[in-house]
Amino acid sequence: MFIDKARIDVIAGRGGDGIMSFRREKYVPYGGPCGGNGGDGGNVYLVASSHIKTLLDFKYKPHFRATDGTKGQSSNRYGKTGEDLTIKIPVGTVVYKNSEFFYDFDKPFKIKKVAEGGRGGRGNQAFKTQKNIAPHLYEKGQPGEKATLDFELKLIADVGIVGFPNAGKSTFLSRISSAHPKIAPYPFTTLFPNLGVVKIWEKTLVFADIPGLIEGSHEGKGLGHEFLRHIERTRILVHIVDGSVGGAEPLKNYRALLNELKLYSKSIAQKPMLVAFNKMDLPIAAKNLRTFEKKLKKCKIFPISAVTGEGINSILEYTAKIYEKLPESKIEYETRKFIYEPTYRIIKEGNVFTIKGKKIEDLAAMTDFENEESLKRFQSIIKKMGIEGDLIKSGIKEGALVRIWKREFEFFK
Image 1: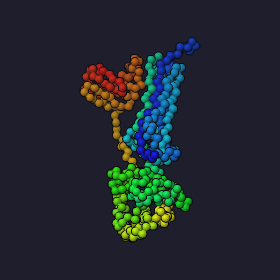
Image 2: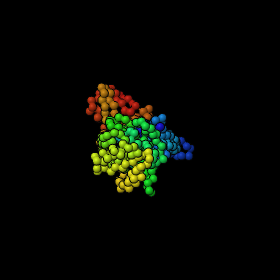
Image 3: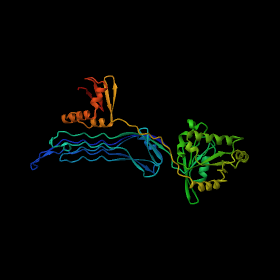
Image 4: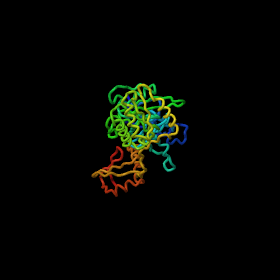
């Protein structure tokens, strides 16, 4: 089954907790704190693999998690770092992270970190100072980064084959390559894009057959809207026109398809296009060709028959001739402009004040509120960050509820 869209959730590993420990060995004269740090959580990576052709696997397994770091140990021993998780995706996959464009995996072996593992919490040895030589203070591990990833596969092809249903695209592809797409005398025989490898002289080109283009495709009619993304990377298009339909239909279909491409994407519509006037093995096609050529005098037209092979070599040789002269296609992505965001923000709902922000939420997650020194440290950081002052400016009263991460507190000055 060909699947070219998928959504998954990934969670990087949580950092291991630091610990509180003191040395009490007989021949260690000064002893002191020796609680080790927790290990960092594992990261999540994406890597482009040429051995995977579809996103089908992600439909059945949409959740991925890296390994957590382990807890620190006494004698200043660090916890073990969590194992990284590497997820293989097809070459040509465009990834969106939390609805923002993230990366285009357009070449094999490209690798990118998509979720950062949490930092290991510090043990009490890390908090030792001249003023506090025996700290009873340590941190829990930092939570790993969470992300929702949207995958959109855009096939890696050199030449795109477009045309209305029953124009002969699949027959053309089967004639020029070893591909075996389904061929039948009814519309929408092809239900997903097919690729074919074609050797022309010393060049090897990949052709992509895009199914289901009809008038209104840009609005989601037919199948074309779902698959037009697969010709975004191509350098050149071959437009197969059905020459066997009566009267002005070939010209009407030709112009309608150009309009659909333009409405879907201006960059696709501006790609160089060769016109293959198909089904020349039928008598009516020769008559229609004369009318078609009169209306499109500036257009390069190749009379062909995908069934008999007539004219196929001419269009392939011309394709190979101009292909190398064309620049690589560049896909434009919607990227987010940098917007300054404060370290935290306060959301007031009645008598409840919720504080949002990664730094403050991580601090709450890494604090042991049962530990008196840890609690004092948390309160000190809250004041230094200016949160307490901003809460007062927001109109908070004593006894009001303050929410940070999964914790709730009553506010007192």
